[in-house]
Image (cartoon, rainbow, N blue to C red; front, side):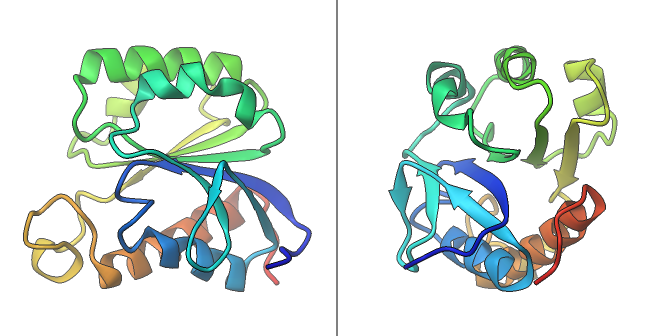
Length: 170
C-alpha cells in the first residue's frame, strides 16, 4: 500500500489498537483525512502503527526516538497501569515531544484528570474520553475493549479532534 501525503501521525497502543478492531480506526481516519501514518509494523490494511501487546507508558519513554517524525501522536494506553506511574511517564513523554500534538484516548470519568496530572501546555495535549461510550453498544463483553461499533465511534471522535487541531479533510 502506498500512503497518501498528509500530516504525519503515530498511533500507539496495545491490543486495543493492534489485533482488535483498531485496524479499522486507522482505515477510517485515512479515508476522511489527509494523514500519513508512521509505525513499527503494518495492520491488515497496510497502515503503519506502533503496537506491542501490553505496551505501556514506560515503553513510550524507551521508544521515543521512533516518534521524531510524527507531528501528531495518538496514544491509547494505560488501562492496566498504575495511574501515578502512567501520568509520570506521560509527563516525561510530553516533555520529550514538545511541539507535537498528543491525543490521549482515555477511559476516565474525571474530566480534569489529564490536566491535573500532566500540568503542561494545554495546546499540545488533548484528551478523548471514551468512558461515556455506551457499554452495551460500543464494547465487547469484557467492558474494556471497543468493538467494531466502538471503533467506528472512536474514529468519528478522532476525526473531529484532528480537524480541530488543523488536519485537513481529503
